Structures are given as structure tokens and as C-alpha cells.
Image (tube, rainbow, N blue to C red; front, side, top):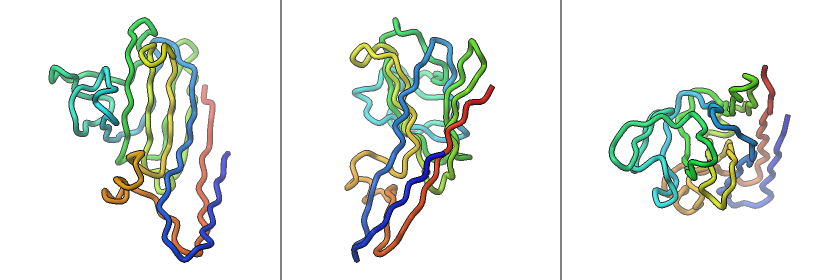
Length: 173
């Protein structure tokens, strides 16, 4: 269990971004675990799987040719793919990965009021030759706080307030 405490000792309302940054070892065939949610690419110029702007319902996305694809299964490192998307409208506060060989799952569980978004960064050999999945329960999207403030997708710490946010990491077999 991880607990975060924030205290604003000022008279200003402070926008902020907090995200867990769990880099997870992966194997081809592993399954990305997300609840019913909407996903959207962070930057299409980075994406090698998702090829269209806008939101889609996980685990589906639209590729550059307009074809519906499934993005919840980890491809091999030889694919040289990479992807980065935001998840919003989470049905429950949970995300993780299931290893197909052992059927074990590493999950992060949280109150979706504390972490209403999940960032999912994937390098399947395509980014700096890394083979990794990074799951990031987050308070805010996008990464630019000014844009998040404009979009109403930012977390705030009110003047003279104290906040507590919790996250639990579990291994399930």
C-alpha cells in the first residue's frame, strides 16, 4: 500500500499532476488489464499502433488505415512497436498486466476519485530498443498542466487543505 499526503499551506488553489510510474517487465502474449474505459493517443507522431485522433473504448483502437485493432496483447520485441495512450472514464480504479505463461497478474488498485486516469506507455522494442510497459495511475491528463487546467482534467489542492491519496499493488495468481 502506498499513501500520499499533500498539504497546501498557501492561500492559492494549486493545480498538480501526480502519477505512479511502474515500469513492468513484459513478455510477448501478456495481457494489458484495464477496466471498461476510453483511451486516446498521447501523441500520434509517437504512436505505431493507434493511428487516428480521438477516443475509443479499450481494448479497441483505430489504426492509421482506419481499421479497428485490439491493443491489449503484448507483441514481441521484434515488432519494434511503441504506443502511449491516456485512459479516462474508468469503470473501476484498477490497472495491470497478466502474464500468459503463469496466469499471474500484477495489479494496481485505487479509488478512481484519487486517480481518475491511467497513462499507458509501451515500448515493444520501438523506443530506444526497450521492451517494457509503464502503467501510470494519474490525477491529471494531459501532461501539460496549463492544457489540463483549460480542459478541466487537472487535480487541485485547495488553499490550506490536506489531501490523502492511496494506491495498492497486488500480485494475483
